[in-house]
Length: 201
Image (cartoon, rainbow, N blue to C red; front, side):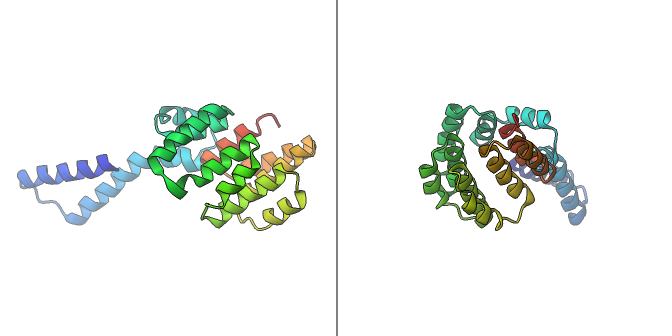
């Protein structure tokens, strides 16, 4: 984004120096198209792709940023490295913004007390409910997990919780079915995370 702004500013100066007449709205449209072209790869892998290998390759290229590093390490089950990335992310972002990532981390390591503490700081209702349902499933409180799951609006969230519940009950046929439904209901980074988390199902 910064590169685009600097580039647009530089083009404006060059056009001014050369005294080139350029319609303002044409210039704006060109800038918007340039932004779309530059950001398409990010949008594609974060929200649109179902190619696990390409998403992982994309994350590897961006792993110097702790957000992407955390996602990559957590997805691959490298929990000490995921925590290290998360600590770095905490230093950069600070405050509530990281609560959801800490809750996911503690949920993955099975520290439900810490996960509950962190989930209280999540503002987004749907994400908060999803993490709470995950905690309930992890604690084998299936009645509560079902109640929370019914409040979720996104299909992939419901199927992911059902996958977790089926796994905990050792119903691997159902877990595999629910995993497939979860993957069919999402794309991008969420697809990658679900595929990795339940890769042995």
